[in-house]
Length: 90
Image (cartoon, rainbow, N blue to C red):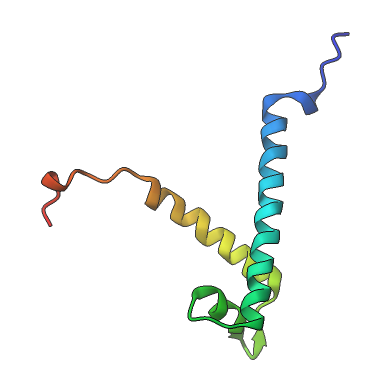
């Protein structure tokens, strides 16, 4: 047998890398949320920390998932090439 393991495939390694990045991002974001609780600012994170639904504050997990979803939705919009200014009617 060649010693091939599914865990060594490029797909598996890419998944592990993405999982590590996501874990690092979640830790970074959790630290930002904690800093906003301690020192509120005029930004979206502070508003999410202070937000209530039916009288209950959002959990940290709910906020983390919302921000991840928001960033995932915004990525295609900001990474798409814009038409040249001369071709833009406005």
